[in-house]
Length: 268
Picture (tube, rainbow, N blue to C red):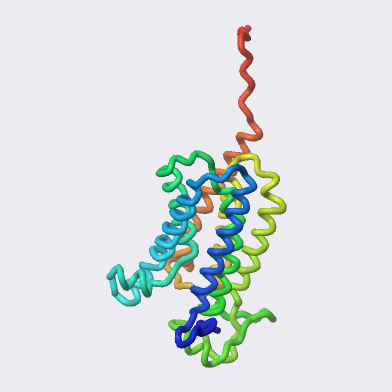
């Protein structure tokens, strides 16, 4: 599509990196606005954000490291970090772990999921624009909104046997952009006022994205690893089950509260 967004003199600015950067900036702004509304500023949030971004970047690299090694047979850390690509699913998992670990290190007791959820959704919507402009868009489709790419663009897409002139492809990243933008609005306008357990907003977002991403993987064109499923789908199955179990337990607890204890009450 457009792997280079523009040039600064002789230096090209990659579309993917540019929109990832804009997504991080937008997410940071939303996070701080939510934090400012939730109470007095706590400087420990700076460390939590830094830890989340750092671990998210590592998780994104680890998520595609196996694919890079299997294709290039280059097991060097430099090769994996510089040329190994990035995984959004791995990035989210790494960011979640980074937030949990950093909060323990700085002794921050409150849950931060409600602050991160809308911020991450907006950041993902913006960042996926860069993916749409620079990566393989999707599998063949007969739907009227399928994309027909130019010969020059198709020539830049590696390992894609169906990326040929005249074949319409699913705009899978457009599906993701719409999903994350809708989740950003839905989380703020609908879910945030209704959350009764601190931190559940992010779990709602993760569950919705896990289900959406599992099905959109079928039109992404990612390599199949086992029984028709991609690596992302195999990761998402247990992750989704864990989140479903959490909300099922929450629902059961809400419907079956413990009976109140009356001080001084004598049985019989």
